[in-house]
Length: 121
Image (cartoon, rainbow, N blue to C red):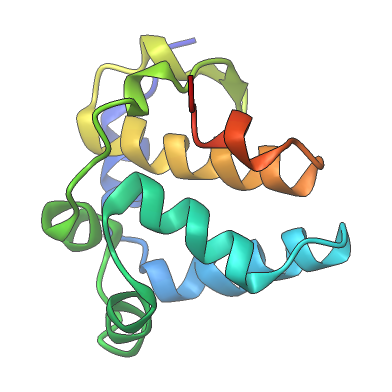
């Protein structure tokens, strides 16, 4: 399934802060914590808790969020299907990075062990 340019534009213009509460609700409803969520976000992006809070407060778009991020070198190991799209086949780098984050949050909510989520050898 091909991702349209319109889909990519919508993804880029969404604010991280508008999606973040959904991530929190998803993981907490499955017995995981905000601290674990932040660990996952930090692993992928390099942001610490203060930076995450700042980015939410500044209402940055996903485009700005990922422009400021330092993507983990093992992020390419995040594979599978999210929202009907195979992550490793997404050709738009920003959309792929957003889907990396979505996939990590899903894995956290599903109870996967942290060392597996963080792609530790």
